[in-house]
Length: 140
Image (cartoon, rainbow, N blue to C red; front, side):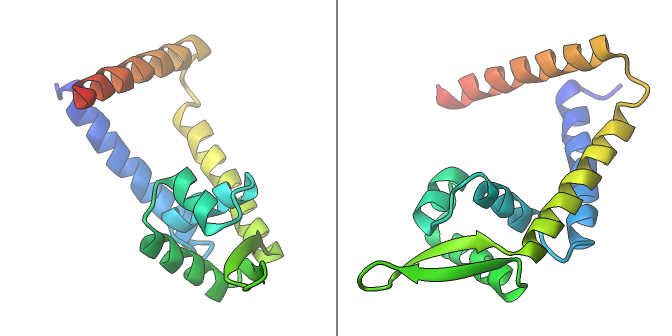
């Protein structure tokens, strides 16, 4: 039998592979999908997005430029010097975000289809406890 952390790592790899398939079908990456989620939540400038996603500005700029090129975002210069950009999700971006979210929720429902609710709740509790334990070790 695999150790808990080994099984968790293998499950994470499988989940990532599925998520890549789901996002690729909409023509974006997993990172771009996460960026769209933050934009939908109201983080609409590079400064807000960098703080929310804990990304450096060069990585964030590349991802934003890619989403603009793919017509999932639009940008508008504001301010007196027109140097600050405000990003807005386009209808194509909203459609992609909705489709990815729907497909990911369907995947999650299929994974836990045969699990009773009490076992799903117990798993959440144990995973949260594991996360706190690992975080505590990293902080020390």
